[in-house]
Amino acid sequence: MIELVIDARRKDLGGFEVGRVLPFHSHRMVGPFIFLDQMGPAEFAPGADAINVRPHPHIGLSTLTYLFEGEIMHRDNLGYTQAIRPGEVNWMTAGSGIVHSERTDPLKKAQGGKMHGMQAWVALPLEKEEIAPSFTHLGEDAQPTYANNGLFARLVAGEAFGEKAGTPVQSPLFYVHWEMAEGVRAAPPPPKAKGGYSERALFVAKGRIEVDGRSFHEGQMVVLSAHAEPTVTALDPSSVMVLGGEPVGERLIWWNFVSSSQDRLDQAKADWKAGRMSLPAEDALEFIPLPDEPAQATRAPDPVEPKPTDPV
Image (cartoon, rainbow, N blue to C red; front, side):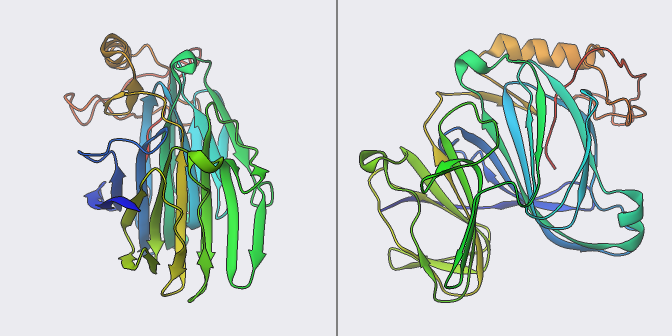
C-alpha cells in the first residue's frame, strides 16, 4: 500500500528554512509534481527579513504557492503584483520563460508574524513546455471546498472528488488541502484502475496521521502504491496535502529550470547570464545570479522581455 516514505530535508534559504520533499534521489516526481517545499513553519520577529527571494527565472513548469499562515508578495515580469494569503492560490506558468520575486511586504515585515505554506513545481507536458508565460491568482473562496464532521478540504488545483479547481492546469493532476481533527478519517482520490490517478502521495504539513497501520508525522511524504486504496486517520489535529496525477515523462532539472532537453536548459542558463530575460518592473534593482556567478551581481532591467520564476 505504501511505496515509499520521504522525509523533508531542511534547507536554510538565508534566515528562513524550508523542508525540501521533491525531488528525491530515488523518486524524482509524483505525477507531474517535480518539486515540493514546505515553507516554515516559522515566526518572524518585528523587523526581521522574513521572505526575501530576489527576482529569478523559470522555464518549462508551473509554480503553485499556497499558504496556511502569513503573506507573500509576488511580482513578475509580466507586470503582475499580487499578495497571496492563507487559502489563496498563486499559479504561475513559466513555459518559455518568466521571472519573478517573492518577498514580505515592508509593513508586514515591520509587524512580524508567522509563515507556513507550500510551494510546488508542476512540470509541463512536452507539447506545452514552451507555451507563453502567464499568472493566475485565485482567492480563498474561489476553489471547491468541503467541511463535515471535523474534516475541511479545499481542492487547490486539478480535479478530484467530482470537483474541478479554477487553476489552469496543463495535464491531469490533483492537489488537495485537508484540515483534520483528531480521529477524523478520509481517503485520497482512487487509483487509476478505479477512475483516479496513476501516482498519489500524502504530505503531512502538521500533526500526525496513520496509513496502513503506520504513523507518519510532520515533514513526511507517504508515496502510495499504484493500486492502494488507503484510509487516512488523523492521530492529532493535522494539515495534510494530498497530491498526484499522471506522469508527463522524465524531466531534467537544473536550478530553477525544468525541461525535457539539455540543450534547452543550457540556453536558459545562457539567456539569464546574458541578461536576455527581463526583470519585474516593480522589482528590478537586484536579481539572483546563476549559482556559479558572483552573489552580488546587479544589472539594469529590460521591461520588454518576459522572465521565469523560482521558489522560496
